[in-house]
Structures are given as structure tokens and as C-alpha cells.
Length: 72
Image 1 (cartoon, rainbow, N blue to C red):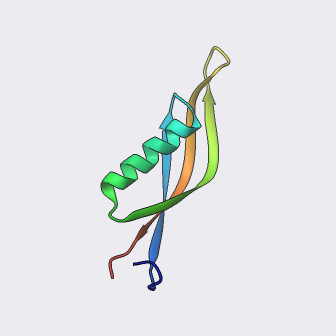
Image 2 (cartoon, rainbow, N blue to C red):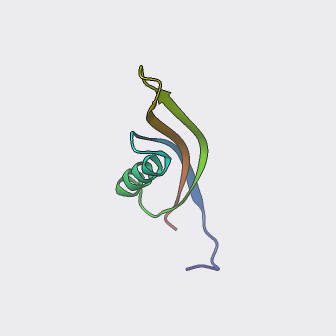
């Protein structure tokens, strides 16, 4: 399949986790893979977080662009 012309569409998704940035990425990519056919790659656009009342990071938020290949 590689070497042939291909067309992709990018969508923006946001992953959220209390367990870190990587967990937020994994959550977003996993859900995207369940709902988008031919998911191919992702890129991290932004990283955000929430600070709880105790002054500690309570949540990580990662904005991703995920791409999937359009059917030929």
C-alpha cells in the first residue's frame, strides 16, 4: 500500500487523564481508533493541566491532531 497516493483527514481530539500526559495520549488515541477507520498517526498540539485545591496536578489534558486515511 505504501508508495501509492494516499489522502488523510486530520481531526482534533482532547485526551484527559489523572495519570499523566502519556495516559491522556493513550486514552485519546485508543478512543479515536475505536471510532475512526484507518487511524494512522497523531501529533501533540498542546498540553494543559488542572491544579487541585491541594496545589498538586489533578488532571492532564492533551490536545492532539489524529489522522486517518480516507478510503480510496
